[in-house]
Image (cartoon, rainbow, N blue to C red; front, side, top):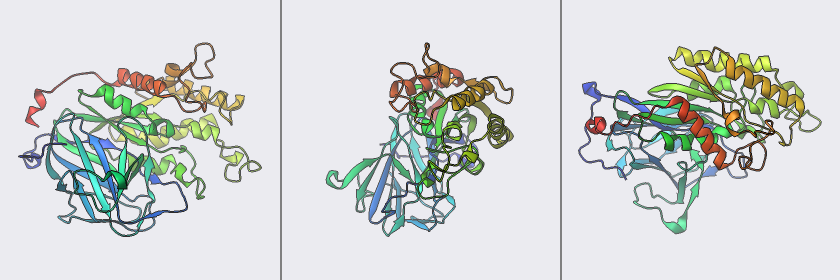
Amino acid sequence: MADNNNARSHADQGAGKWVACWGNATSITNRREAIYAKNLTLRYPIRMCFNGTMLRFRFSNLTGTEPVTLSKVYVGHTPITFGSSTSIILQPGTESESDAIAYSVHRGDTIEVSFYLADYTQMNSGTLVTGPLSKGYYAYGDYAEADELPINLSRSTNWFYFLNTVDVLTAADNHAIVCYGDSITAQSWPDYMAQQAFGSNVAIIRRAVSGTRILRQYDCITYQAYGLKGATRFPIEMRVAGASDVIIQHGINDIIHPVGTDVNPFRPWSDLPTVEEMQQGIENIYVKPAKAMGLKVWSGTLLPIYGWRTYNENREQMRQALNEWLRTSPVFDGCIDFDAAVRSVTNPKAFADGFDSGDHLHPSERAYETMAHAATHKLIRYTPRLDHEELF
């Protein structure tokens, strides 16, 4: 746990800056038989990538349709407050930021953010993510202030509800890189990138929702968890303190989802865009707004889909054409060629041996580590600054 003794606020002295050190997207959770929880504690361990003197926390009910009350909210044993209140009501469709909390952290510390849901709570805002740094816990009962959750009343979870972003007041040259995408990015490569970048002045922030598309979204409960379309997601998810760069690895679902209403009433052929429409969408929805924010924008090529259940040669040609544009278009600051990193040498349409998770769409863990290496090599210059950061 992080040491909170003698935390000093530099906010009024102008020292340092706020930088996001952890983050996920918020989307519509999967619609199951039960969508409410009561008398539940959620706990999320978060590793600190920087030294810092203060923390602040963003909670999101972006996709909720009812108010959500967080009855108690803690980081370790320290209450997280909202306008000096120790509880918060998250209104539907909104995000709320906590007060800045004096809380000293050091690179490598693990903080635990815990909150208690006392009354019936709509669990409609969250996202499913995986990776070596992405695991939460829940327990039946009020254990927000407890050192440990009772083993007989708790389980692990990869669903991250309501907690959206953690910022740290840290050294001025620290910054954040945003990884934006769909299920490929909701899985492990951003966590491996964060591990590979550890010790540099870079935080890796994940903004990813499985099933999302650039140009479309589903409004039926069967596929609502596939999330919001790009034009809706991007302005909200790019609220990242201290961000300097964004990696865009998005678009494969636009290509593989449509199958025709005779097969699936929610996936008409009219949803299939042209490559030109996808290019325009990426440029207008992602690149231009990101550039207006002062960010560098890196394209990430789309991975192989050979053998996926909706694979056909037309979809493959679309993927190849879009990848060529992602590699060569001057609208980007550069390209991270994930496709080249994980594809087979003998059959470039498919994953290399050992790099396919088995469904022919999502990579294996080995492949995710390789993707992370490609991104780290492209974007991060390893510059340890442990002595410099002692002031924080």
